Image (cartoon, rainbow, N blue to C red; front, top):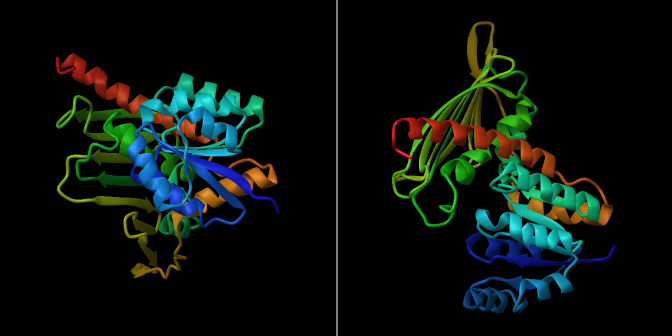
Length: 312
């Protein structure tokens, strides 16, 4: 089987990990990297023994596929350029900042017959994969995603930066649409929403409570599912899960096997496989657009409240 020539655009924290992992994946040839910060680009290229290209165009010319880890506000412009060149694209979440732009990217990918995969990494979390088969019809879902403040990701609100991970997981696992949205949030350390909470009522009357913050003294990432006779708690950060079931009025722990792995390496490997096998990517643009649209409804709901209170 031939090797796919892949380049990495944006080699900050996450892009540098992409670069390392792509060297380890079968049927992949890392042709090089590009970053607007030339010094950083050279540093990563030297570390992983590949070429640092002087321009995005130069990298696109040499690659068949690109993994893109640029700031969210640049997703549309960079993504459009890569897809319009007929290159397959792995784009980190969220797909874009506007639904209209996301749909343009999807249309270009379809027209150019490009594999276009979005990096919703929590789908590949070993604990989420382990509990997926147990979920039938959750009645209440609660997610909390708290992070220490860093500059990374603050080009967008916390909803698109952090909460969208959990939004995608809930949509993926339940397939439900929101019926009622009530959300609150405030800017604290930036001029954007840094902490947010959303209470969602789904079509089947199930309730989802999302909390996300980048104003925390600790990293905390959990999601809990409550369904008839079963409670499931997943710790994203440690990739562990606890499951309890009720049988004959006795609550017992449910034995759960979790197959350990590297979520990012797995999704990048599947991206390469989709190219080689000419098949649909595991996280499609359509799915990413649904998560984005859901996130933007929450964001817009919060900003309407802030404007009404004279805070935005």
